[in-house]
Image (cartoon, rainbow, N blue to C red; front, side, top):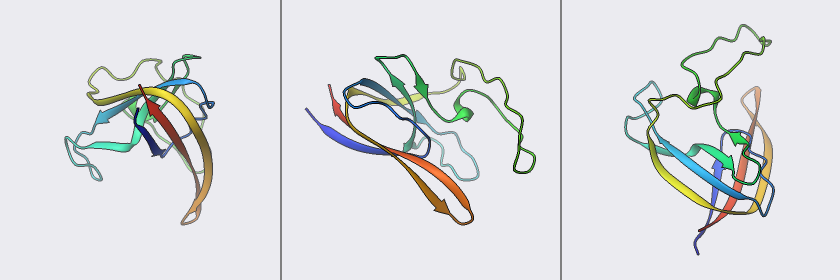
Length: 119
C-alpha cells in the first residue's frame, strides 16, 4: 500500500487510525489559479469514521464578504457546490496528522499535514 503525506491550507484534525476520503478538486480559472489544475494543498477531506467534512468554504458557497478583522458567522450549505469537479480521490487510513500555526507576513495561518496509507 502507498503512503503519502499531504499538506493542506485549512484545518483538518482527523485522528490517527480513522479512515479518510480526500477529494481533490479541478480548479477553475482565476487570478491565482490555472484552469484544470488539481491542487494537492486544497481538498475536501471526509473522516469516514465520523462523517465530519473539512474543506475550504469556497467549495460550498459562491462568495463571501469580510469587513475588517471581525465578521459575523454565516450559514454555509452542507453540500459542496454542484459545479465542482473532483479530479482525484484518495481513500485510506490516517497514520499521522499534525496541525501547524504559521506566520505569513503579518497574518497567522493554519495548515494541516496528514499522512494517509491508501487502500
